[in-house]
Length: 122
Image 1 (cartoon, rainbow, N blue to C red):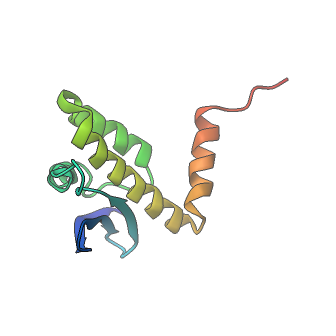
Image 2: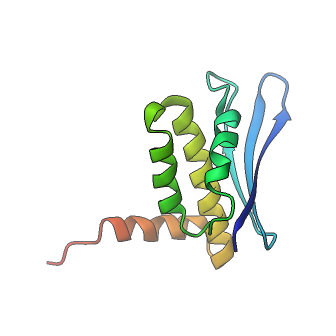
């Protein structure tokens, strides 16, 4: 399973737009994320487009490594719009990994948190 495309989708809802990121793999699996360009964040889609080449062809299940790479790539401007874009990518990768494993995304997030901060033994 390799990342094939990252696609920003936008739905006009009158007073605001709804913005979504769709990550599709070469085997047809899809991960989704929602982000917002309506209130002070225009440009998030452009940043996602700029980050996409760093993800194409990679295994989406290694999302933690991909997020670390994206932060390194955007280290000159790590906050603001870049942070929103990386967050959208991370959420879509988490969704994709959870779907591939057949588990709720919350289960994957909880397991990642336990790996990062294992319980202390008494």
